[in-house]
Image 1 (cartoon, rainbow, N blue to C red):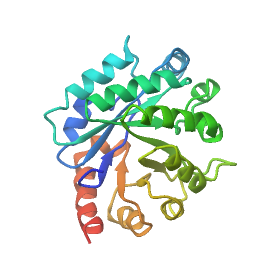
Image 2: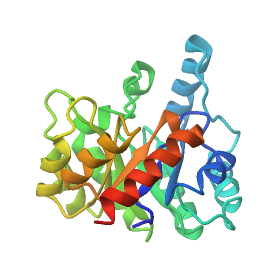
Image 3: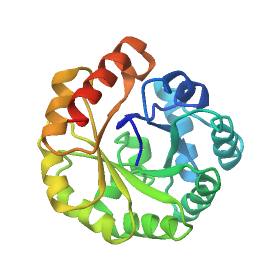
Length: 245
């Protein structure tokens, strides 16, 4: 899906084209965003900015923003993707078309656990509302875009390997797994599906990269330290050792 098998994971309000360009010497992919697409998710994002002093992308036109940021990466040797949030499926489909036309992948956010987003049906809520998540993936895939889902482990009542298999069945190409404190879930997801599996959480050094590679991950991703060249260099070297064997 991308080479080297190291991705930069989305950072709310920070992961834009400039961020991806800065990390392109180290990574094979960069997931920009996340970005709220519809009225409900945008209202939740504004609430988080107001009440928590969070950073969020809140452009007047989210689709135009996605297109602009992807256009800015046309000359950058990295595979771009966009992490999107929405309480309704139609904006996800529209975003998928933009990503398709720009040669980017679409990552549906079923990961964020902030109360404001969950209250409107975004983020982690989708892990339990599988019928709606299936619809998002199926309809986005119908556009011809490459579609995947960012998920979180350790959500009560959610069988993540089974969910990954279901996502594959409705057209997903990859799953991006925040393992939380359960790194071994990667092996279970790999065993359950033929999806491209990206392992996220705690990727800082050779030990973490080796563990995820041993569990069968196809790639790893770096979140918060993605702005630190020293960490990226260390992880890039580890990926070359552990994934090229």
